[in-house]
Amino acid sequence: MADNNKMSREEAGRKGGETTSKNHDKEFYQEIGQKGGEATSKNHDKEFYQEIGEKGGEATSKNHDKEFYQEIGEKGGEATSENHDKEFYQEIGRKGGEATSKNHDKEFYQEIGSKGGNARNND
Image (cartoon, rainbow, N blue to C red):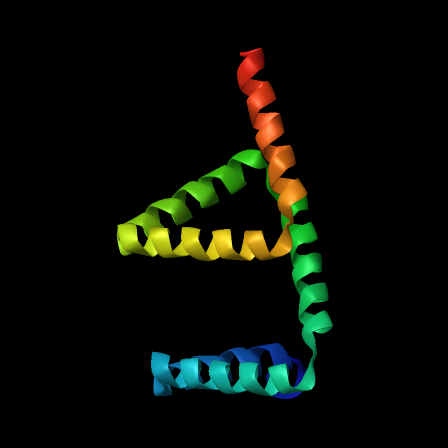
């Protein structure tokens, strides 16, 4: 407590937070988060979020090593495979193939084929 029996701002905030958490459930906080997210998205453009993502990625990469990312990838892959069937992956592959074919021309595929053939000949 601060002087004169007054509560500090920190203590008042903590007590207020504790009281609020006792009076509201998970759905209450999810709704607040959703409303806040919607309001924020109306006030910021794509570049704002790209910049935040880039800064977050840079900060995260400074704090974690290769094994950290491998473990995350492995866990994500396992969770995804448990939640999806063969058709899901076929659909992803089809969409990826369509997107790739729209972004590349005949020469791109000829070059890939040539490199693949050369790699096989060198084995």
